[in-house]
Length: 139
Image (cartoon, rainbow, N blue to C red; front, side, top):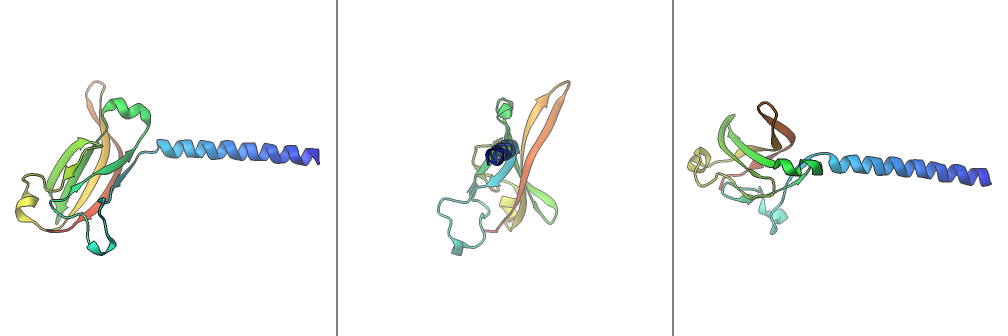
């Protein structure tokens, strides 16, 4: 009985270490998520729309905080880039901006948001961390 208990405790400890280790890795894995609006309703239809302001939730290794992690949003219509904006990861993004070809022409677009940071080691380097894609409806 004692041997069985010790074996069970040892198994649980190993399992606990494995679980804790897996959880730790998950929190360090970069992730970028488009945040829904505070007043989101299921019956609203497509969101976001051209001219809406959006935000993102970003997860990344803490040691990158000093690198100035950013998000860039690139939007396309029929394969042609019509809007691009880059800001700090915790900023708001006005889809279409104050002016852009997209804001001028209107219509729906497919957007990609990339989480990244710049490093400088003998030259400037773009370091991609995570992405998310979303559709934007016409207003």
